[in-house]
Image 1 (cartoon, rainbow, N blue to C red):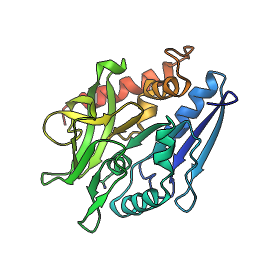
Image 2: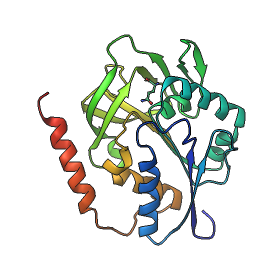
Image 3: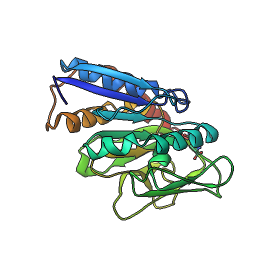
Image 4: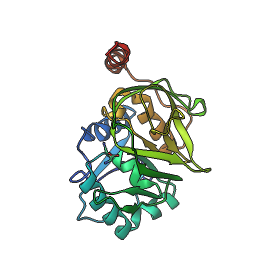
Length: 242
Ligand code: GLN
């Protein structure tokens, strides 16, 4: 961060924003402002270059064709690699998560290279599409409460040795591999299948991104009663028998 200004980059809202992903940008922005930070939010369309000087990058979910176009453009652009080399934080959801891995199956049924920023590989699941509410326990190393969200994906994502599972599901399918893992992360790059939008349902994940960007262990507390009410409502709804 420079000049006490947090630079938040939302990648390709024109292609990867099918599931209310703007909510994730709004939550990070608001929680940063509530801590007195000046925030410059940059929404980068897919015909624009990705800036390399961002602190936090968000990349959302999308349908199969826009996902392929986004992967092509991000590979061609190349700047997200540089941003991560510079220590940027990346938080990705579903299609965005798959794009950050080594490869996924595109809308033409072909293997599409990803960016390889996460050590994960996605294949097309042969079982029923993973759709529904999810509750999961986040890796205790990250010190976060239970994860709640909604998944909707056909892809099944396997983790390689340098990716850690972001969470273990109690309810839902997560990565779809049958081992209960959900999402993946390495030092500064995070991926999850959770929609919701996930940061509105799990605001302490937004705070984790802010702490990493600011390189601090704690942030001033803020009034989270509204978020808590939403979280509790969604957790209770997820636990209702279908
Ligand atoms: N197209 C991908 C899949 O179905 C991602 C879907 C999404 O972003 N919800 O696996």
